[in-house]
Structure formats: C-alpha cells, structure tokens
Image (cartoon, rainbow, N blue to C red; front, side, top):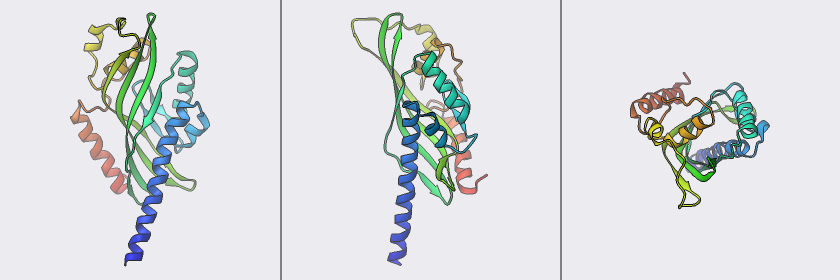
Length: 208
C-alpha cells in the first residue's frame, strides 16, 4: 500500500512540476518575443483574454509582436509559486503574478505594477501538458515615479471611472489607443469570480 501511495505521489509531483514549468515558460516566451514558444505552450485556437486583447493564442502572439514593435511595450511578468489542481488529463492553474512596465508619458517616466493571478485550463496532449486558455484575474495596481519630484501626467478624472482592480493598467492601455473591457475578472467583482470559478470547477470535474 505504501509503495502504491509513493508511486501516486511521485506521478503527481512530476505532473505538477511540468504544469508549473509550462505556465512560467509561457510568460517568459512572451516577454522574450519567442512567438513560436508562446504559441507552442497552448493547444491550437486556445482563447486568451487580457485588458487589451480577446481572441485566440495565435492572434495574441501576433498582436503582442505588433504591440512591442509599434507601441513600445516593454511589459514583463513574474510568476510566483502555485499548485495546480489536476484531475486525470485536465488541470486548472491559478498563478499569482506581477505585471510591470516602464512608461514614458508627456516626458515623465514612471513604473506601473499590476498584482494579479493568471488562470488557465491545462490539458494533457500527446506532446505533454499544454494550456487550453488564459485569463487574468486582477487585484490592484499602482504607479511609481522614477523622480518623486515630478508629477504624474495622469487624467485623474478618467482614472476615477476605471475599475479599482486594474485602473492604472487600463489607463496605460487607453492612452495607447486600446479599448479596455470594463467587465474583466477582478477581486473587486466577486459576482463575476463566483460564476467563473463555478464554470472552471465544472470543467475540471467533468470536462464539460
């Protein structure tokens, strides 16, 4: 009995490690402009939704490339430790993360920090585990001036109209010309999260 338990534990640890490595490698590929590596982290056609994008992984990779090349985006991502939930050939990944970027607006430099969680469905394929979705769950964000004697070039009246869980990240995207969805998942909208988690848990249990 002990040997069987140890074998099950070993299998779980190996699968957990593969999924954690996959989640971290996906964001690293995006940050390093490794578009083949980014797309290869997913099953084909997997849906991706962020503050500025809603579409397939293939479309996201191309949109990210254009964003970096034409709009000067230098945002990076840190993924923190997490434990995926695994059920046979399906898993759910919810990884605490930070998005950070250096912004130059109206001659003033400042950093933006977004604290969030990256949520994905994960499926076992013939090539190993792959992501089957990507969704941000936003918590809070803030700005930090490089020179504290300067003044943030921000339209505070506009900021007041934005969701508190991602208002500064949204403001940056609006200034760059993107439309930002006001109904994204965030800790300030428990109603949206309750529905979302119920759907994802049902998928994990049944595949439906």
